[in-house]
Length: 190
Image (cartoon, rainbow, N blue to C red; front, top):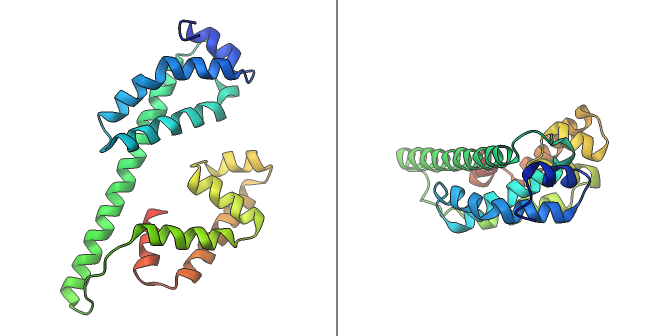
């Protein structure tokens, strides 16, 4: 199937054919990994980019046009995922730098070790306790990277409802983190 022309793969893929999806993966997976590997700091990060690309490709399979370049589409998704990763890393670095500058100038606090894993566990525990709809909206937006429009369509809700549920999720997390560095990290990273 990797030798099959892209236009044929896309036609079959659009009707939920998993063999066509596998064909696209076999045809472009390694190339995408090499592409992402040039930009991402680790192989795991590059593999995560490739995984996100194929998840998005599967989610958008019905929107693909048979006459468009699927290769261009796939590499555009990869480029955007890499860009998002760099933006997130930049925000993390700026947050850490401003935190340490603030506390070094004030001299009021000893340096705290930032434990991202602990923060993620706290947020995950808070999310687990959320009402079902709020939890689904939060997970789809923040963990899966879907837009408000995509979540609304997926859950068959209005965009306003999705936005309200997301706002409520943030409020619940902020209240339960109770300020401090954990809250500051959450607001920046998530």
